[in-house]
Figure 1 (tube, helix red, strand yellow):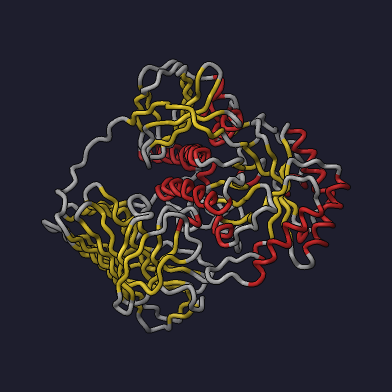
Figure 2 (cartoon, one colour):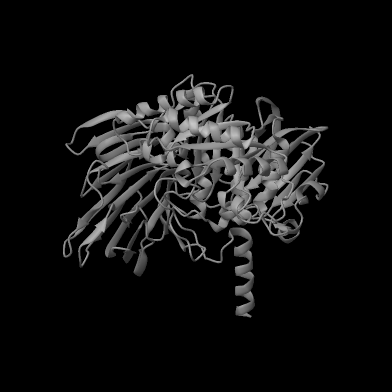
Length: 638
């Protein structure tokens, strides 16, 4: 019986997440109106009543490659009292450079929470960062006032950034105080080192991160064996506190389609990995109907005329236009490099829809601080592109994170659209963080508009896993949830479909011109043999909607349901995604005629039929249930 139950659990995990790895244990803790979760040795989602005050407090160890090992927790002891609790545990973090044991004590009452951490290596330990990291959420924080206390004791009034800040927000920090509700102030103070804050939205994380050890100091650094690192974080509240929160069953999410919007649905692209061109392409190319095929040419890898021709042939076979991406090495005169590329393009006979040109990652500013002289190289690169490729639609920006675009604004007047990529596993890899990160998309879109005006905005990769970026992706041989990994198994489960629709809802609302979601092969493939992954149905649906007028959607709830709607024959199509691991009931306030639902109940059938969401469905009344990480396409006559 136990074996059968375990098989069912594994099967369900594979459907939802693409991996049998169990999610970490979550332990609920409370102290009066203060509630939180203990997960992997970190405090998560610290709430005062209904208000999330702090998204996370964690004592983290980062290795020399910025990898974050999951701590091995032992001797966990939880002592709950009438108005609070005390938690202690031992932890051990292993990296390629050794082991670092540490000890934690967490004590809480209704008005105060303290988290103490002490690391004590037995041998010299190399690290890029060891110590506390504090995450502030975006809601009720971004753009709002904060009082900053510095390490010298001085205080100043400031604001959390509204637009995404490419540099650190605050330096030499020892405390941060902000109003979390009328008359209630939360003060987060740190002891044992010097902290500074960065805007995590640069990497799609939906938070502001206050971290230990300034980036200006050398890293990696060594913690001597036999020494100790002792730090603490204290969260206190002033004012009249609310009554303890009473748990209740969430009400159905009420959804309705509103007025037409000026925005239209983005064009959809798929990446053609270079390996796909070099290997047999006998695999079935399902009729996904995308508008663009993204092909990247990197002269440093020997790419040239034959690769361009192969990309063009593939795009024609799929019925899409070719969007070339050219990596400018900038090892010589950019004019010479672009002239050579233009000759290869002419020789190939390809007629791309556009060419995005971006300097190689090591030629743009990756670290915060004053822009180095090579930043002037951007102007030279784009002027050379204009001269070498007359009449061509030229994109610019970066093929790396939004961070690099935000720190290296392309010169105005030289490009026709701006590009960057996004990944959700840069700093964390837990399920809830992945869905929370969807909130950062609108902030990124607003920031891009602030420095590019009406220039079209294209996302050249939007995935959970790490498409590209500084350094090598983290290995993932066990098919698990791993930060900084290129392959993330959730991309192939229902989770990936829900995440993709949530991302598209935010990007479409943000006015993005084109989004590349997934690939024809490799880690981000939407298909496998004769079958398709759940996200394929979302991408197919979004591709069919490209260019259609959008409608406002009222009712989607942050963290529960994401939605978008667009004009269709005879009315509108409404797409909804359940962003949670629990089934959600949706109450429709707009008349609906038919709904196709992709969740656990239809997973197998949808995997066999690429047209599942277009050809199946049922009549519905005023409500429907969407299973864990499920997706629904609803037809409405409005």
